Structures are given as C-alpha cells and as structure tokens.
Image (cartoon, rainbow, N blue to C red; front, side, top):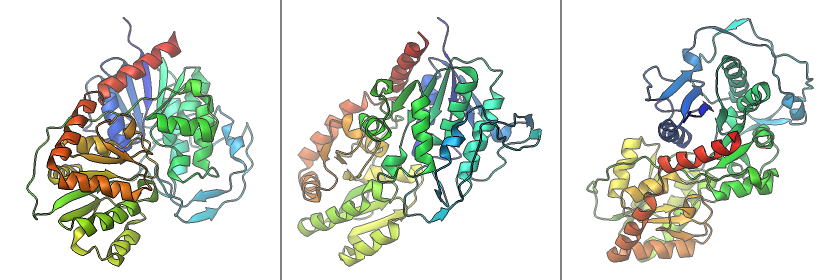
Length: 429
C-alpha cells in the first residue's frame, strides 16, 4: 500500500528546545514516520539531528534560496484592527507582560513583503523574543516557497507559530490542512481574544480541514470560544516516551510533594502553596518542591515566606530533563493544580516513576489518567485531603500508583500516530 506523504511544520524540536511542544513533536515524528513518509520543516535545526525515516529540513541549514515576494493569502487584511501586541511573544506567554501600542496598518491584497531576490533564512539565536511575529511570518514565507515543487498529500502543523505557513501552503497547493493544537491563546491568556495570536489561531482553524487538539478539554475551547465546527475536531491525546524508572535516596527524611511546570497562573502554583500550608499543619514531615520558573515565581516565594513555610518548601528554578527525572525518582506525591491545562504531560511522567498523582479536573490528562485522584483546581481543601491520604497511607498510595500503570499502556505516541493516520485517510478518501 502506498504510504501517505506528510509535510509537517514544526517550531520547536530537541535538542534546540526541550519544551513540551518540542518533546511532543519529536515523539510523534518518531511514531508517525513508521506509517507515513514524513518531511519536517523547522525554522532552526541542529546539524546533528537524525531520525530514521524522517527528512528534517532546518531553514537555518539551507543554502541561499530564491523566494517569492508576496503572500497568496489575504489574511493580513483581517488583522487591520488588531492594535495591541506584547513586547515579547513566546508560545506560552502570559498577559502580565508589558504591552505596547502599535499603529493601525492598512494592508491590501496586492501589498508585497519586500525581500531581496536571494535570502538565507533564519540565521538567528532564539526562536522567541520581541520579533517572534516577524519570525513566524518569515517562516511561513520561506517554508511555503521551499516546498512548492515537493510531492506531498497532507500538511500537518503544530501550534500557532506554524499555522500561517500551513494556511499559505494549503492556499497555494489545495492540499488538506491538519492543525495539531497543543495549546490555545484563549486558554493561555485567561480568556483574552484581543491579540494577534488569537486571530491567527481562529483564522487557521477556520481554514483547516481537520483539527487535532491534545484533549477533549482543548477541543471544547476551540468550539466554544473560537466558533469552530466540532465536526473538524478529532482529539488525539499525547503519548509519553518510555523511561526505565529508578529510585533516588532523598537527602532528608521528609516525604516530597512535587510540582513541575511553568510558574504561571495557568499552572496554578499559588494553589500548590495554599495546599502546602494546609497539609503541613497536619503533617509537618513533608517538603513541597516547585520545579520550574515563570512570572509568578517571585510572588510565590514571598507567599511561602508569608505563610512561614520555611524549609518545608523549595523553589528549584528551571531544571534539565535529567534533574526532573531525579526529582520524580525521589517524590512521594505529584500534584498538578492547573487552572487550565491542555494536556499535562508531566503527570504521565510522574506516573511512569510510580508516583501517585493528584491532578486538576481542568486538564486533558485527567481524561486518560484514570488512576489519578482528580479535583477542581480551586478546591484546595480536597486537594490537601487527597495528599494527606497518600502521605499517611502507603498502601493507598501504592494502589493509586499501580492503577495508573494500566493507563500508561494506552498513552503512547504509537497510539496517537494510529489515530492521526485515520484522520489522514478520511481526508484523502
């Protein structure tokens, strides 16, 4: 049987960035390449990257190429009334960042993006920063021109940074467009719809032939807050790379309750500190560890001091994957109190290490990790109660941990790839 030829558009990819988006793109590429012919275009790739069966194209590694000077899409006209942009745009920005006003720019269908005839793209240090929007537009222009002579059946994009490129390539080629949605602006920025990123996401989802949110939770946001036709939506839960679990001796006798993630409002770290305060009143032989960094970190440290948590709460800052695994290897409970979580891969990683999990009901991972204890993010009393049960009763903790092992058998990138392949088949039928 002839394999489907997939043009995949990614933004992050290890080892350049090891964030959740990059890890997901890597895991999915490995699994999907066993079923389809996969070409992956990245704005920046490491020359040492090599995956069997995946043709990786890093725009920063290309020779000088001739590109077209105009976009086929007239979408930029639709952005005329967007006035406010963050000074620094990252894939998971927060609305607390400084805002700057920009002048309204009128655009017409005939307006051209001025470039020289020959251009070497993406000679850049960082994929994010105060010129992220320009980079996103540039990526769309260059990648669209680069692939015009290629033979492919489906376009597959990952998150908003590659959506403009996907729409552009679809409009030029007529090929079906699949959007893999790992996170949405509405979700990240607490309901904000007045941003360039939101408009890009909405436009792209309207143009797409199929949308693959990483959870039903995220799919429902696309329907309710972007007005997307639910028939387009096919939820595909994330997988997790298999690891061999191990144990590490703690440097202290107390039990560890662990939080891993960006220290932003979306992840609910303030609820974690509140829960810590309640648990320690009844069970002082515990330590709470916050592994990660973000705009709430300073505030969180001050809150911990105000609540006199002292040596019972630790803030590690950013940690490498290896250090995170070491923390999981010594943790007794994993807590994910996210206010809004598209998926929550860290909970699966904790389950792999046999750590019993307490997770927010407002998360995608709660749909697949049946062996976790689930609670509304705001219900700190119930969250504290669950954690106390796990800390005090080793038999109960072991039962919760063992139940989660059955769920991990489903949560693989191979299963995600099978579901995606079925979507491809329907689009090409």
